[in-house]
Image (cartoon, rainbow, N blue to C red; front, side, top):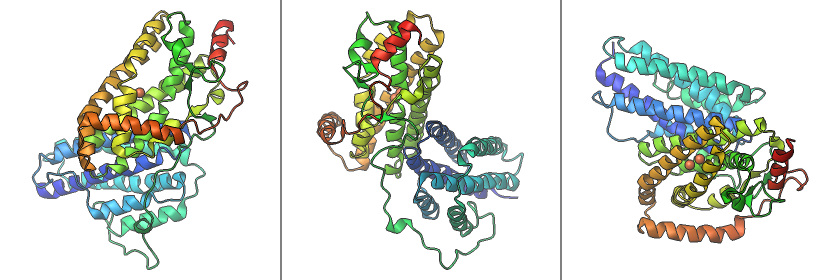
Length: 423
Ligand SMILES: [Fe+2]
Ligand SMILES: [Fe+2]
């Protein structure tokens, strides 16, 4: 029967694994093309953040858990290796066929090692995490069907075997003689653009020409616009928040040494954006929009990936999100006329979430700036960042041509026609 310190030590390890999973698996989100897979990864990251937070809370009740949020080198290097796969589906196979099943083993071995009555508070948590891990495995399964990553998974499995399983609960097996770590020689880099799989792409869905883009800003703000048109436009807007999913997901790895509380809030923010995008993704087809005609906008990712993590986070929270409320308020007023309770609800939750995101920005931007030795005042930094964004826009903005000719793609005029003729 294990003593308190032994159980605290195991909880510490479990915390570090969940934490490092979040910091690394997020690098694959912008690389996978399937939109629903992006959504699922965001959900798993959020749930992993919950596991890590509860482990830390419970762990700190026990003596020996430790005060900081750091991750030991022995774990760190396995996760570093896991993101060096040649393609994202192989990387995900590594995470989901090896690293997470081994985490499930670790949770189960925790349950076997602890005293069911003495350590009841931990037992409850861990039992719940076991259920989550089993569900994650079922949820990811359809996406990994047909992905042949046996060699990659065997390598990663060998790396975990070499430490005797995550908790040292198994026999230690030495790494094969021909094993070499890839990551020390291959610095990690985010991709220059994000993947959107089968969907057509463009630079931006916002514009002024109703025969060019689906969202005409002046129409959104114009009280004369048919609210049914506004409703489709705002769902397009929400669905395109998948671009926020892609660029926000890059911030985790870049701030891997930040306090865990930052990653907890980033994980919530990420999951919120994936839900906002799903509002559009689920509702648009019901309103008659063929998603294959809706181009995805790439320019924000393509610009932001050239900025520092602090600049990326500043643009997102202090500019895009803080600047969206007045237009969205007008949109909400217009949509309310439709008596579409579901649309009202989705927009109200979106607004509430976005207020949270701006609060996160105020809390964490100074912290991220500090992490990178940025000593300017926050206001000055935000102003300078806006300027740099406009400069980078000249090079990386408007650079993605339309995948579809105007007659095939969804445009504002087509939305109007759809609404007026019902086709
Ligand atoms: Fe959002
Ligand atoms: Fe947001």
